[in-house]
Length: 87
Ligand SMILES: [Zn+2]
Ligand SMILES: [Zn+2]
Image (cartoon, rainbow, N blue to C red; front, side, top):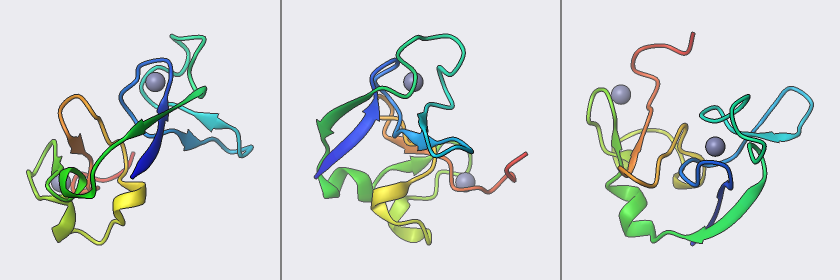
């Protein structure tokens, strides 16, 4: 499936900030391209086996939809499931 990722770092799905503008939690403030989007093709099979960088749970075992895995990183095929809290 086609996914929108940050054009600044090329790694993470673009999130929305408080104003609804696209932003990137990784390179926000460090790259002028933060929040600019780039489309990449990622297979559903790959997203299903994406693992949480902390607890190693796979995406298909969480309640997250494959379309909005938080902090998904293409390079390592990892995301963050929320296991350590959000603050
Ligand atoms: Zn970025
Ligand atoms: Zn986790």
